[in-house]
Amino acid sequence: MAEFSPVERIKAGSRLLRGTLTESLGDTITGGLREDDLTLIKFHGSYQQDDRDVREERRRQKLEPAYSFMIRTRLPGGVCTPAQWLALDEIARRYANGTLRITTRQAFQFHGVVKTELKATMAAINASLIDTIAACGDVNRNVLASANPVESRAHALAYEWAKRLSEFLLPRTRAYHEIWLDGEQIAGTEEVEPIYGPTYLPRKFKAAIAVPPINDVDVFAQDLGFIAIVEAGELVGFNLTVGGGLGATHGDPTTYPRIADVVGFVRPEQLLAVAEAVVTTQRDFGNRETRKHARLKYTIDTHGLDWFVGEITRRTGFALEPARPFEFTSSGDRFGWIEGHDGRWHLTLRVSAGRVADGPQGSHLTGLREIARLHRGDFRLTPNQNLIIANVAPSERQFIDALVVRHGLDAHARATPVRRDALACVALPTCPLAMAEAERYLPDFSAKVEGVLARHGLRDQPLVLRITGCPNGCARPYLAEVALIGKAPGRYNLYFGGDARGQRLNALYLENVDEAGILAALDDAFGRFAAGREPGERFGDYAWRAGLVAAGTTSGAAVA
Image 1: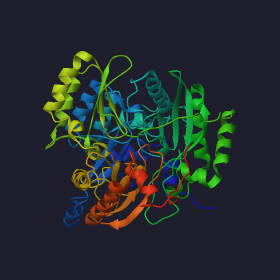
Image 2: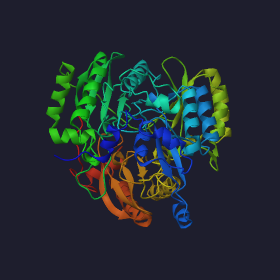
Image 3: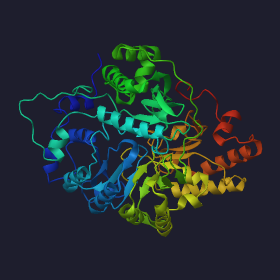
Image 4: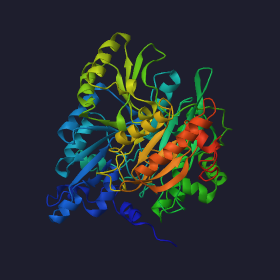
């Protein structure tokens, strides 16, 4: 029998995620944590990182790495109040690197928090009525919901279900409150994790709720997904999707991105029971020996989809109904002002790579602080790293527009489609997995792609472009029409062929190529596209039809 991975040993001996985190935090000799605690702190919403830009210089000086911590919030559906925005802005300027980052999971990330201020930062986040538990680690992470939940009553209900699902799947350990909030241990009470058990899940788990016709949550990239079915204006239930996941490992064909399967329909009152059945099946049957094979997608592919659906039926006590018809038309955000069903307005702003900061492009952090002081609605983070100033009264639009222009937050009104819809992960200098640049490279590379498109009369052509520093898929690159996936400094694998709806994986076009080679390949491909496209055809669809990438080279089952 194969041995469990070292991470399983750490979880089993952690006393439900406590480990020696308190002792690690109190050790002033080093800016880092003890080795086992590096795993456990992820469940609390943080990763230890170091500045790779200065790593070699510090090594030459015989100094330890420049350790700091990334902290990620749990924010179901990406909704926060103006008061919470102001609190997080203050935290970013006081404890972090003076920026807020919007993630592809509709949450905030803080970067650059040092160990001596980690506990104070966590406490400040909690004081804002936001927490970080289960934002990382081998548990269900932040639950996504379609980004404009008050645009319709269906969106509002989907958001409420995202909140309920997030709370339902939270770890029950009191370790978080004891370590970060000075909560007291409750003596004489046996602590249990009713859903996760003492060793939690084999690997991370992601869930989302989508509202057609816009697949802004990329529901087919999630371990667990619910597609809202609206009939006669009412939310009647959800199509269930399982087995999505985009992480892979370079050079290892046993790892691969996978599109989720649509396996049936559930009533709203069945949603939590079905979610629990999916999670506990993964808990009991997921691979705990090899972490790179531990996601739900591998569990399904190992045991079979029919077996998995049978487990859901056995654990819930009811069978799934047949999936109902649905249609997605896009996966991107809708920029500018949009009126909701109740007469209030929502303004979607472009935030490049999700980084909210003051800089050459505008005083974005300052501007949003000023808006938050006056705004009486809420803010909504999108899974595409953008921001919605939501629930705006018609009388308030004018002052918001003025502040948006004054602080350079109106990039969406000037940007080409390729720049407006591009995504990138953080990558260098802080992500320890990064092999190449992503976030820092995105503005420059997007401009060069714009130039290539313009050369072929395609400047205003929509294009889903995504860049990641490694193959783990944080910016969902395997669903993009054009994707760069980091292979080494300055070198990437180039992928073509995803679609605009997030329902098809792309495929490898060129491997381990530098910028010059990428731009030459794009010049050729865009030239062929301009000459041979059909009316209304997207580049990703053309790439498949014209054979730029071969059909059947991607993994995962077809989407209904």
